[in-house]
Length: 480
Image (cartoon, rainbow, N blue to C red; front, side, top):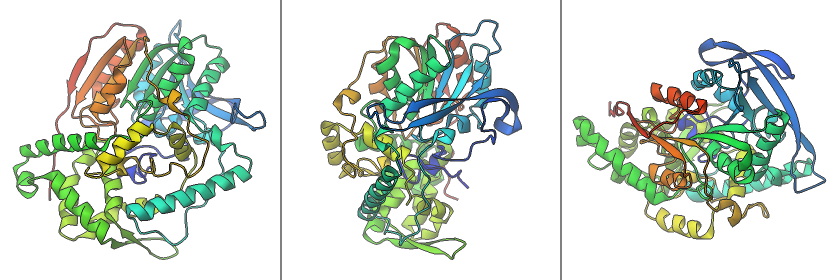
């Protein structure tokens, strides 16, 4: 079973193995001070939980103050360097939750250099002050593009109104405010400068930190890059990614024979289910819930599967089953389909605020008309645009910048969420960069290859690295 996780990009990106907003912390300790942090595979380490307060919306003097949380892993160095602040992806992932997983060994290795700070961004973990809403329990929409878009716009507008009435400054949940939180964290730590370590949306946030507070940043390690105007990805670039995946099927003759053209198979399944949604039962304590699955729902699911090789490898078998009329092939994902009908606040607000430029939106709409994923990869953006007003951060936020900080940029060649062509646009902003490409790695590239950890440690130690190309075995596609 694929780990349950919602991502801001897709209601069903649990398939990508990305962390959900509001997931329970791996630690139950919620008061400030020393405690034992439980990391990956039962490992424990001494750590310190801390808190500091910030305005919920710095532009609104009447907004409430909220408490933000972090965990500090003290350095083992005699003379520690600037703290290394980890920026989780999503938006909605928690740094503390991430360090309970396979990225934990990297964090521990970095203690040789400096304190490592797992910072839970506003709206996540113990930094979340948006009231949790009950899971959606109304009549489910038909899971087509039209049905899901209408549902999500109505649900989000309703939730926004409820949160605002409860005193939550929802307009404060944007990437600029989070970037200012990072600088306030620096002040709280009494650090003159900090290092940044982030991935996916964490790189999007990292760019905002560099734009707003770059004079207080020393070195930068980012992976699975997402640029200032890349909240919504270009559908045509996802098509090119799928063409590269299709060529990999040549190494598996049985799969190649059954799937002569992967993109054509996917298009056929999407079109048929979107025109004729099929029922699937979701088990519940109150009795099974029947959902009608359209092609758009399958596009959302596949948009999560392409993130990493281990789930990417599922595509041929899944689509062959659906093409044969076996809707039961979606049964393992039924709970994710149902869970994707709710909103949690922070991920949607962040995406809406980062927005999309008019030029890019026109391009996305044009490309989506013929693309395999349509515009599903980025749901619920741009589908939520205009659901609430006055939140877009504008073109100044999305404008590229020149970055002269020493930077290590890591990418996986099979990352279907932030494809290489998109990442290249971001990397061009870094003038003092070292790039590492891991062949056959996906979105979760930091832990994919054992040499990446050593390179990150050496880079933060101040060593000069050369561009590198690492390799992993290709995914094993099967149809049985």
